[in-house]
Amino acid sequence: MPSTADTEYIIQAENVDKIYPNGHHALKSVSQNIREGEVVAVIGPSGSGKSTFLRTLNQLETINGGEIVVDGISLTTPGDVNKLREEVGMVFQSFNLFPHMTVLDNICLAPMKVRGLSRSDAESRSQQLLQRVGLSDKAGSFPGQLSGGQQQRVAIARALAMQPRIMLFDEPTSALDPEMVGEVLDVIKSLASEGMTMVIVTHEMGFAREVADRVLFMEAGELVEDDPPEVFFNNPESPRLQAFLNQVL
Amino acid sequence: MAGFKPVNPPKQMERQPNKVLWNLVFGLILFVVGLGLYKSSQSIDYSWRWERLPEYILYKSDNVVRAQFDGTVSITADNTVILTDDFDANNIQQVTEFQSSLVYDGDLVFEGDPLTSTVAWKAGPLLDGLVMTLKLSMVALVFALLLGSLTGLARVSPNPALKNLAIVYIELVRGTPLLVQIFIIYFFIGTVLNLDRFTAGATALAVFTGAYIAEIIRAGIESINKGQMEAARSLGMDYNASMRYIILPQAFKRVLPPLAGQFINLIKDSSLVSVIAITDLTKAGREVISVTFSPFEVWFTVALMYLVLTGLLSFLVTRLEKKYALHG
Ligand SMILES: Nc1ncnc2c1ncn2[C@@H]1O[C@H](COP(=O)(O)OP(=O)(O)OP(=O)(O)O)[C@@H](O)[C@H]1O
Ligand SMILES: [Mg+2]
Image 1 (cartoon, protein in one colour):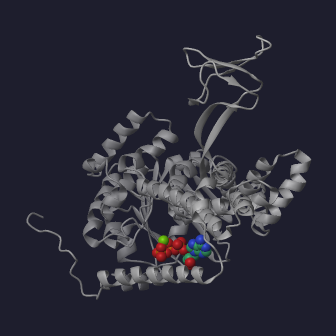
Image 2 (cartoon, rainbow over the protein chains, first blue to last red):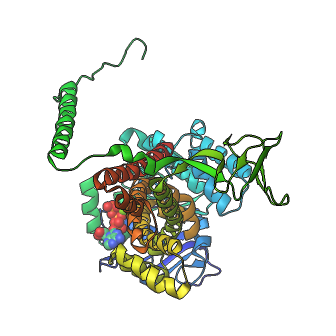
Image 3 (cartoon, rainbow over the protein chains, first blue to last red):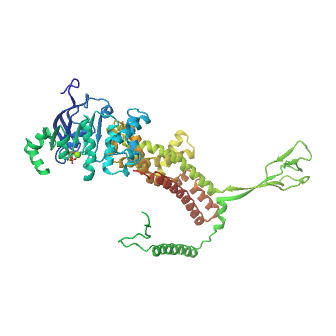
């Protein structure tokens, strides 16, 4: 059991087991420690448990065994889960913007309601973030009026507005047309260069190789390989990863 | 887009029905059905007396003030009719508010003679019944909305007590006929709590409709993509804030059309309260029939009056829907 204090890791997962109510064993004793500022990419075939693992890190999924400690907060000890989520931003494959609100309100809402910012403070913070993702002119638009790539950049800005210490990305570009993938990946790259701690589930191998400090390979609920990108892509140890890479590359 | 006007009708591959022809067919069918109704109404032994109906909706009342004793009339400058008893000068009758005076200054009148008359429009029993139906429906609607919204929220709540209470309420109400509920609420609960007819009727309607509204609200909430709640929660908002700012505003738009349908049902269901002797539109109709012996005319009129109420409601909700139709 990892101690919650005096540790160099911002995310510690130890022997995590996840069994869905229907009996599916989605995570089998997954352990992973992530340092502050590290960028970790997670790769693996469909249904291997990548999303499940990511979602356990902000407790969108509860776990059935093991222990997770994020930013010093144990996720298996009773406490305020909202406090944890304030520090862990999440970006979804399907954006999940709030369709009944303008882009600006999408970004402002949580800082105002959770962090207690005034509207003017929240708006100036939102404007800065919109500028940063290249969408200053879209503040008054509704999500339905934006392209997929623009929506995903707004979703990233929305998560960043809470000033989280960790960002989780679940296949942020999988729902996008190819020509829009680049604009989203660029935003994530710039975050990486600023030292944001990130866990990114992705199918973009080139991107994983470029930005990740480490790449994880999951299959059938197990964490099979954990390497720096050069080793992961050039000299993978496990035959299962070799087979997978042969298929997709 | 300069210089390009939309083509009317649009150019397309699929064959479209001939609008003019089929509208004519529609008109023809209406005409034939109407003619058939008319012919069959002629063939039965029934004398239609539509002309007698209007007075049961709205009538002119002539309010005549009569002399209470024998005496002499005097009319003052500010148009007050004063009747003075010839044998007792202290005994006087004054009439101030009237439209026309039927006597002149100095007239000698006897007890029971008309002094003044005032003509006014008054609601007949059918209009009174309509107003009662409207009042009953509106009161029931407000409480049904309140009850239904709270129950709907309880139904999706993670708290088992709230959730189970909601389920029990919904199943009890949906599993029993409204008529039986009205009797139970009026005769049992009404007796225990000493409720009057109107309160009992409105309560029964509110309880009944509330259960259906709760199901509509639940369906509305559950129709919102799971990702919306997840996105809200992942930003650190708690369950209540996520509901309030994210889920409910989106669900609200989706539940408007089924809610409108339920409101219309409420107005129609309110006709059942006539069994506990509330003179709503339906009971007024029965009463008018018992004096006019014109059941056909009365029921057609009553139906039309319900249609006016429900039609008005549909219209209002459609406008509300349009107003909230934008985005999401
Ligand atoms: N809510 C759920 N209930 C039951 N089983 C689930 C649930 N969510 C996911 N699963 C199952 O758990 C397994 C892992 O799912 P997960 O979504 O984590 O896979 P993934 O690696 O993210 O796949 P993909 O690349 O397709 O997104 C799958 O077999 C899936 O069918
Ligand atoms: Mg997934």
